[in-house]
Image 1 (cartoon, rainbow, N blue to C red):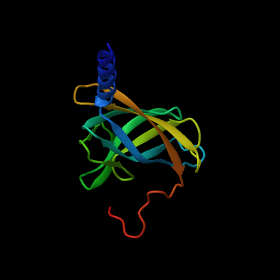
Image 2 (image 1 turned 180 degrees about the horizontal axis):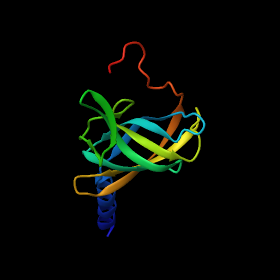
Image 3 (image 1 turned 90 degrees about the vertical axis):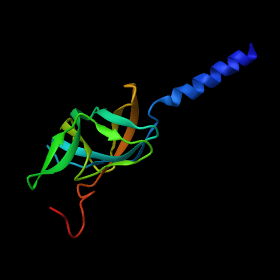
Amino acid sequence: MKKTVIASILFAALSAPAAAQVTVGDPWVRATVPQQKATGAFMSITAAKGARLVDAKSPVAGVVEIHEMAMENNIMKMRAIPGLELPAGKAVELKPGGYHVMLMDLKEQMKEGQSVPITLVVEDKDKKRETVEVKAMVRPLTSGAKKGHTHH
């Protein structure tokens, strides 16, 4: 009987983290000015077994989307994407000028030092979803801006 209980506990413990096992590093949101209705959230995301970021939510925004910045005919364009691949064990950077989480229809001004809750929805190869709760600190408007020479 004891062996069965121990085996069941071990199986449950080992099978629970079988999902994507996602870690998030250095999450932050760019501050806004009064009446500004959109801003970006940035972070590093690593999935131990490979996965896909498929959705994001936050109570501070009416609309939250995964976005990419890409050059098209020598013009930088931003657009929503259906998901972002998270290769196994490789950190994917969400940063200004690249992939990011767009917070739109903001319900309040994002002020420096504020903590913004964001829920990331990640899907593994078997289409199983898990959520990752993130607390992103609001940084000054100039955060992430490149200093000196920039590429256009």
